[in-house]
Image (cartoon, rainbow over all chains, first blue to last red; front, top):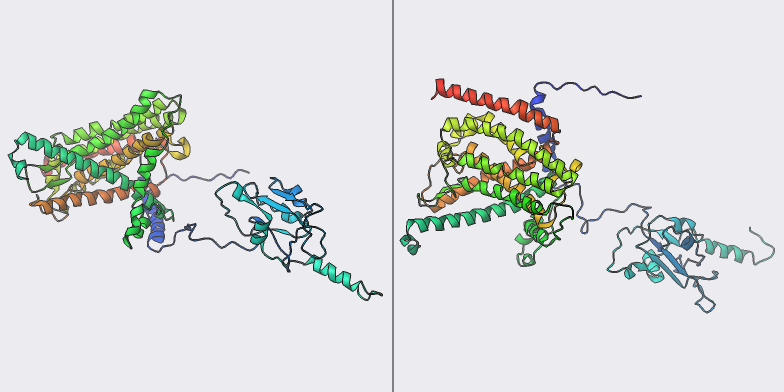
Length: 188
Length: 364
C-alpha cells in the first residue's frame, strides 16, 4: 500500500528561508566545532593511524604451522582447485623431493604460491582445507612495487601465517595409534 | 625614489598604474589559490574531515616547528594544485567546436579579473594623487555590471562548444539564471546610489568612511540581502550552482574540460567570488575604512592598514560564501526562477520606491 506523506504548505515565516538558514547554520557549526576545536574528526589519518582489525576478520590467506612448527599443508591441492580467481598455485613434491617435515604426514608442497593480486579474500581455501593449513588472517593492505613481488611463496606465507595450534588433528591421531599398539586395546 | 619625481606626470601615472595592476593581479591570484584552500579546509571541517594536510615541499625540513604546522594547515597545497593543473594532460575531445572550446575559459576568467580594476582596495600610500584603485572611473558600478555579466558568456560558450548534453544543459541554466538575477542585482544597487548620489565607487567609500554606523548595510539592508543572494547566483555558488550541479549534470558546463582549461574555469569562479565580495565590501561595508572611522590615510603605514582592513572584510564575506555551501541544499530550478522573478525583482522595485519617497519627503 502506498503511504502518502502529506506535505503541509510552508508558513509565511518558513518561506523567507530564515528557519532553514538557522538550522543549516546550527548543524554546520556543530560539525565545524567538533572537528576543529575539539579535534574529533570522523576520519582517520590512514598510514599513521590504523583501525583495530576485529577478531575473525577475513583478510589475506596465509599458510600456518602446527604447534611443533611443522608445515601443516599436505599438498592435496583442494584449495588450488576451489580457488575462484585461480590465485593459488601448488607444486606437489616429486619422488626426489624433501620429505614432509611432520612425523606422520606423507607429503608437503614443494612450492605453494598465492598471487595476492588475484586473491579475492573469499575464504574458500580455508573452508575447503582438510588439514586446517590455510587461514584468512588479519592483513588487509598488501602492497608491493612489482607484480612479481605480490606473488607470495611458501616460505613467505608460512612466516606471515605463524603457528596455529588449532584442533591438532594429527597429534591426536598419533596418540590414538600409539594407544592401539598394545593388545588388548584398553581404550577406544 | 628621487629620480621618480623628475619624470613627467604622465610617465609617473603610467608607471604607478602598471605597478598597481601587477600587484593587484598578484594578490588576487594568491587570493584565488588560498580561497580554494580555505574552501577545502572549511568544507572538510564541516564534514568531519581533516582536509589537505600532506603537501610538503623540500624546504619544510629546515623549518623546525613552523614547517610541520604549516603542512598540517595545507599551506603548500595550492602550490601542488597549481603544478598539478599545469602538468596534467590537456585533452580536447574530438567532437568539440575547437575555437569556442579554447575561447570559453578565457572569457570566463578575464571579466572576473577585470572587475577588480574599479574596486578601491585602499585609500592612499602617502601621496593623495595616487589613490589605491586601478581605475577611478566615474561610472564604476556600471562598468562592474557590464563586465561582470560577460563572465556568463564564457559558461554559455563552454556549453555550446563542448557539443555534449550535460555542458549544454548547464550553460542553458546559467544563462537563464543570469537573466533572472542580474536584474534584481542591478535594481538593488540603484537604491544605494540614490542615497549616495554618485556612481564612482571611491565616492561610495567616502560616503561610508566616518564609522561603522555610516555603512550602507544599515541604511539599505534589503538592498544588501538582494545583492548578496544575487551574488551567490551570479558566481554559481551553492545553493544556486545549477550550471555546475555535479549530482545531476556530471560537472555541468566544464564536464569536457581538463587540465589548465578546467583550471581557468575554476580560477574564474573563485575570482568572481572575490570580485563579488569586494563589491559587497565597497558598497555595503565601508570599503577600506576602519569600523571606527579615521578618514583618509596619512602615511604608508595607515595606508597599508586600510588595505589590510579591506582584505579582512573581504575574507569574512568569502568564508560566508564557503560556509553557505554546506548550509543549504541546491535550489530546484523552478524555485530559483520564482525567487528571482517573483520575489527579488518586486522587492528591489519596492526598495527603490521607498528610498525615493524617503529621500523626497523625509531626508533629502
